[in-house]
Length: 310
Image 1 (cartoon, rainbow, N blue to C red):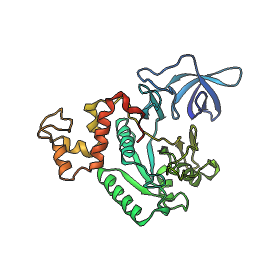
Image 2 (cartoon, helix red, strand yellow):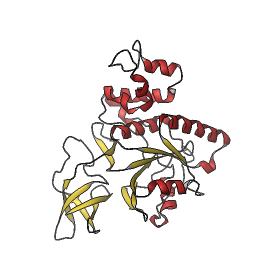
Image 3 (cartoon, helix red, strand yellow):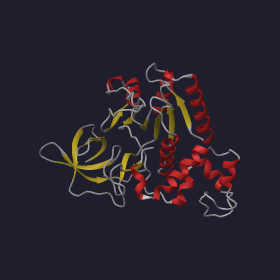
Image 4 (spheres, helix red, strand yellow):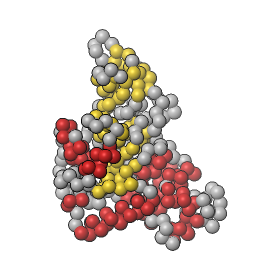
């Protein structure tokens, strides 16, 4: 029997069969994905085969090949990965310039990982209703930066509903992953789009201007007009996984654009003579924040780095 994994609570997986029935399932035996060292061999969005048992539950016996996925370094196990979701049409990265502040390093790491695994990303700038004039100006600068690189950006307020119609039109008929730091308003956005979801929300920590986890597991929520939203727990850091240094340039669209003109084909864009990327950086065609994110990911080969928060 075939089905779609719509919820992952850690040890159990809710699988929606082709007939529309939801069956609680477990992994059969020592089931592992070939070639991927992962803390969660089965992810939300996976297409699987299951075998039911007398208790009314089932064993997952096979995972269909994934067309894409979003993956990050496991927070506790540096040599393992955590697959956030599989087989998605697009990802919405929810960003806030304050309350809490989403760092450009976090944004760039997410974008690079999505590029690596062929997942289109839309940046959703939330909480526009509570920004000061200075914060609004900073947000416009960020939107200009990422729009110029080629990423679609949307401004929203989950509280008063601004931008919701735009989001709904983008969600229609697609499987969309929602991700971002804790506290950026993912649950509030989902409650606006799907009031019946009635997800828990929480206040921002005043002491640290950081969010607190309200979603504790990943789940696919079906949209009435077709498609799914994948709700995921908020994440503090985004350690990239299994990226070779020589591949990294191609995951930064702006840096890759100029790298074609470098004198040496194996240029890492750090100090080499005739480096077109360094020249573009000097001439302000590449943003300093993007280049710093690139350097940060380039140094991810250092195993001791993975416990940092970005």
